[in-house]
Amino acid sequence: MSFPSTVRRIERAGPWIYAAALCACAVQSPPSSDDGPGSVRLSPDVHVPLAPAVLRPGEAVPARRFDLARWKLTIPSGEDIQVDELNAGYSLPGAFYIDPETGGMVFRVPNRAGTTENSTYSRTELREMRLPTESAKADANNWTMEQGGTLKARLRVDAVSTTGDPDKVGRIVIGQIHGPDSEVIRLYYRKKPDEPKGRIYAGLDSVDNDNTYSPDIVGNANGAGIALGEVFAYQIRLRGEQLSVIVEPESGPASLYTVSIDPAYAGLNLYFKAGVYNQNNTGDAGDYAQATFFALETSHP
Image 1 (cartoon, rainbow, N blue to C red):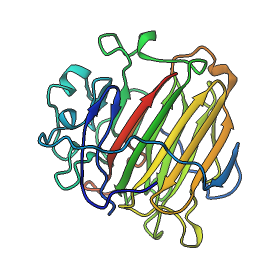
Image 2 (cartoon, helix red, strand yellow; image 1 turned 180 degrees about the horizontal axis):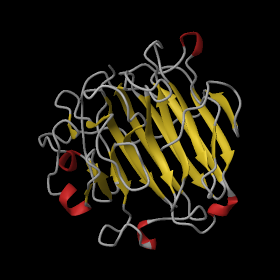
Image 3 (cartoon, helix red, strand yellow; image 1 turned 90 degrees about the horizontal axis):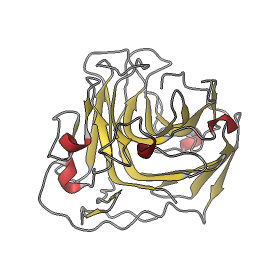
Image 4 (cartoon, helix red, strand yellow; image 1 turned 30 degrees about the horizontal axis):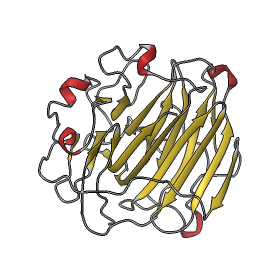
């Protein structure tokens, strides 16, 4: 994968979100180790096939640069911004807006803000809405593992928390497959204050909310990892019980993680989430996490 070094073009197209790149849950984080379900391997021939960025000049609000017609948004107060309001030109300074230098869509979340039901952490995060005129709980707004789905994104993590509980510092979720009461997968980025780069791993839930963790999909030992401000891509794909995650750094080979999910998810409603779900609710009042997304695509066969 190559990334443009200057802002080039942005375009809306169907249910996908395109934009230019500028190269420049409520669970505890696991130790960095090779233990965990599934397997990880470096895959030089595997890529995240995102569509090329093309120009969409002008507007500085997210829904006029990106196609958000099939998403709703949760903001740090815990409030939901529904699809129609989001697409009427909604932005929120300091939380959800367009970066004027890159054209990217910024998600920023303080450590200590509002929360949603069944969570103690704050978020600025999109929720997939396949049929926006219906309730989020409607079958038509969700999909099953038998139907399958793919989420792809290109982004950079700009900041992570640096204060508070050491078990929570530096930890965010950047993509999810969510079920009715648990998450099939949470994709984590974590960088502690004394680490030069961050690592990426997955949190996996059973239907009964038993948590397990993958090995590091991208580790950060011995100078490896993904730095703050470094553009990378990910793909989360579920087909039946088979879950795969690709993480492709700006330079170097992609990593492929594969695992079988809890078969009890069969027939249950699932949906994608993407943005920043800050996994630190402690620390200084001004502490925060932030990521900028340059592309986001969903598809269902």
